[in-house]
Image (cartoon, rainbow, N blue to C red; front, top):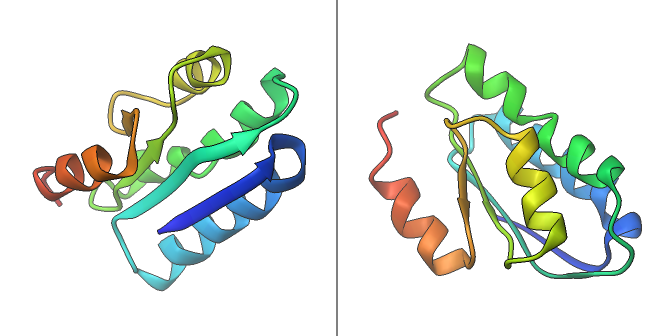
Amino acid sequence: MVRAEGALEDVDRLACEAILHLLALGHGPVLCDLTRVDGAISAGPAVLLAAPTRHTRDWPGSLIAFACPTGEFRSQLARQVGAHVVLTHGATEAMARLQHQPR
């Protein structure tokens, strides 16, 4: 699990790198918990955080989930990730859905 906390513009790159690192090590599925992220909302962080999900299209057994509360950032993130990525409101729900995804 990757837990991001603080201002979105301060944690987006670190969270992206952590997701990629866990995928490279084969420690999947990967859950990125964004429920404690705040700050200014822009499209840039959503694009950056969605970047690792492109790899899951090539490696479908590598599952990624995002726990992101309802709001503008969730909407932006939803536009960036594909249907193969789990996007939920909370971490508990994301973990439950990841367990039922085929690997």
